[in-house]
Figure 1 (tube, one colour):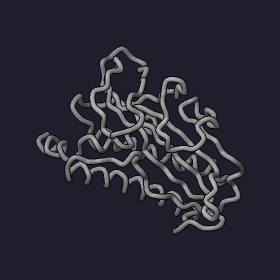
Figure 2: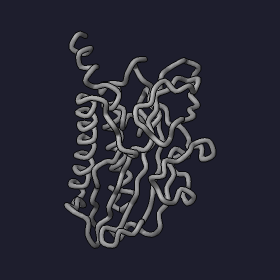
Figure 3: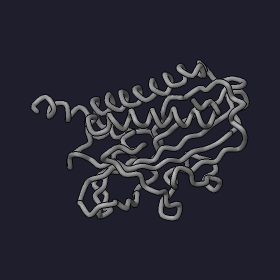
Figure 4: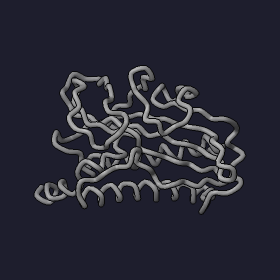
Length: 228
């Protein structure tokens, strides 16, 4: 227990960067309300997005993505840029991003689709975390963990408990590696209940990070047409 408490300070709020991208036993996926939720500005065509995955994600694709045989994934962006307040937070944010970036590449390697750089015939995936906020059930923000354009997220929880929850948005651009042409965009929302009322730790989100990688790989198979 003592070791856990010591670790908590190091693994504070920035670890929640990816905490709500997929369901876990203690998380709840929320529908995207296009009227209530302002957009970050990271994507170019919000008006073209259509609901998928039971309205918990929205997507627009300009054409057939099956023509791409290789995929290059850019490092995850924090939009706007994340300004850590201390070295520990910067270290944790880097570790979380590295964990996911490595997982993305590993999934592509297993499918023989990993491209080392953009180019003709390569689909470039540009992911960004665009909104993160920690709130209570009554919708009053407790603290912002990223200086995001999405300053307030409206969350409708499924229970009456006064739990702290973390709402997160990820937005993705899909581009042609040769021409830079925008081929598609994706917006996904999720929430994850915090196990502690003070701060979110890596222990809270580790399983969700793994779930997100699984979700990414399933989506990759579907979009590129290499379903297994």
